[in-house]
Image (cartoon, rainbow, N blue to C red; front, side, top):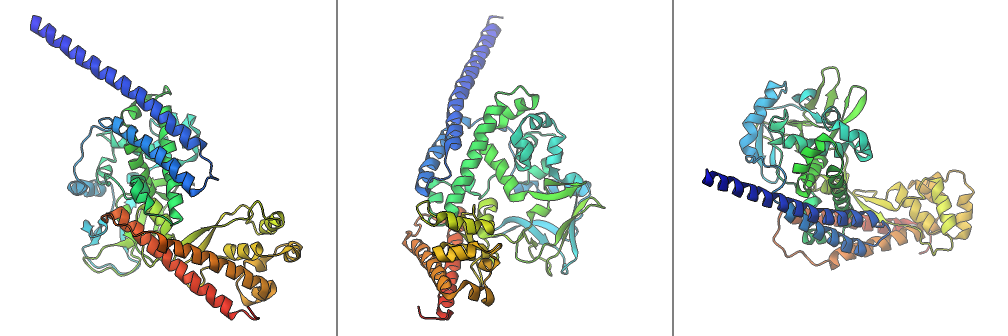
Length: 492
């Protein structure tokens, strides 16, 4: 009896110590999380890139401390490697009505897992179908125990992607989840910028994507801090479950899953954000959109975008997206991307004496609030919006007065010869020389940036590819602008 009593007392002491440690950790976490929330809330968009980087380092250090404390918390369910879960996954899909004869999951160099043909498919032929009942969507979240939280949280009501991320976390920790076979096949981590170290992010300079990456990271850090506070303060039953699993590492995993896999489909009369199992294992290739949701049959359908021979990887077209978009939200770069573009930050200085008049003309074209303009890959790299900006930016008072008197100065956005004649050789030369100089300065910044000497991992490889593609756009733009100036009439 005495020994048993001593044993029980020891257990109580151990439990007490664990509880005290948990309480202490929670207090430390709360302090750090409040600092993250404050830092991400006070940041001013007007800050320059250097200030933004300093701000990022502060946030990153806080999240490092938070992650160290959170180790040991979160999901206690260990999972097998993705490859070990393939057969269970395929069995689950078949049992629930998915059809994919002639298709299997395989590993591909440079892609990890993808879909492989086991027979020939002709262009336009049906490759696979995925019924709506296996898709995980925001609607499932709204119909789940998470609904009570959604009703009281404005962020979840307006951002279905975040709702889906929280629902995914709940289902990941539920061993009885209907979607467990799907969740078990998902990657354990991603190549999105949320997983980049500060050194890997620095390697992005001077790409405009560097600033976009900092903004995305800051946004997710703020979401994490915001929801962490909500989860530990509101008295809603489902939040008790989230308290056990809501860590920064788990949240960035869920968010990255959504960023890399979300699709908008029409269920009933509304668009819904959803995961589409199996189909979302197809990797990207240029082509045309060959996937659709069949409302009559209640299923997603994927058709071959080209002929696929037996043993080939099956690709689909993700849409006309730039490499900056693919890099930030999907974690890869597509070389020779004909839809690629480079973002230029341009604006009218507050010290420009003609600022108000220039903004007035820009406003007629709906461009007064635009600060980012695109250079495209290809024969005509200057976007209509950019063309209008450089023309207006380089006008004098007399020229601005003339164009201000025109109701809709549509010639300003056109590059055809008639519009160019209407603009006039003097403005055209001034505008294109301005843009040429700007492109040459940006291009020189890539040359000045020291080459990354660190061992090449997937993050650094993608950064290198992204910057190579951006240099190609700049080189093409410089050549194009030089040619435009060469062919303008009149004396330079």
